[in-house]
Image (cartoon, rainbow, N blue to C red; front, side, top):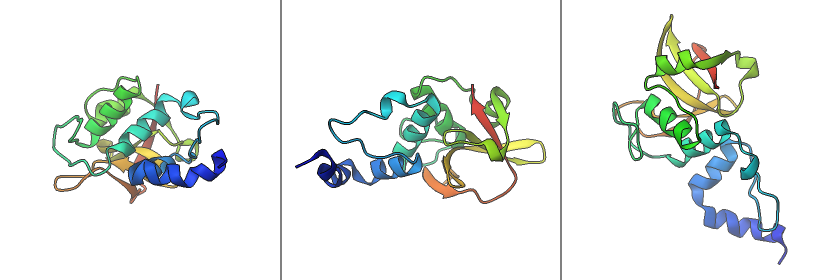
Amino acid sequence: MTALNRVPSLMARAGTASALTIAAVGGSIVAPGFASEAAAATPATKALQIAASKKGSPYKYGAIGPHRFDCSGLTLYSFKKAGKKLPRTAAQQYNKTRHISAKSRKAGDLVFFHSGSNVYHVGIYAGKNKLWHSPKSGDVVRLQKIWTKSVWYGRVK
């Protein structure tokens, strides 16, 4: 059996969350004997993968993981595990990122939801106008389409 023939069985063993993580970052499964993409992963890509791995974790106000999260708790946790430090709240995180345009956003950038100048929610951009986030009380960490144009983007330095 060649390495390429093993990919479907690797996919089956990887599970749904891993497959979603791979799809979210636009990557591919690396079969044994092939060069690892993970070795070249940036902190932003790692943070995105970590957030995706928390799919289904319940929202809890003020929680920073590892099993429950609020929105900024998920981004804080994900970037911390990827080796980057972020402040606690969505507004503080916005102030610590390099602000970028929607046109230049990349997977792993932060998506900040705002009303006027008030930042009230944050998630991690997954590509294709979607983000990983911990939405609200009674909900869970999930991948969702960005539902408004009232967003700003920030790149973690």
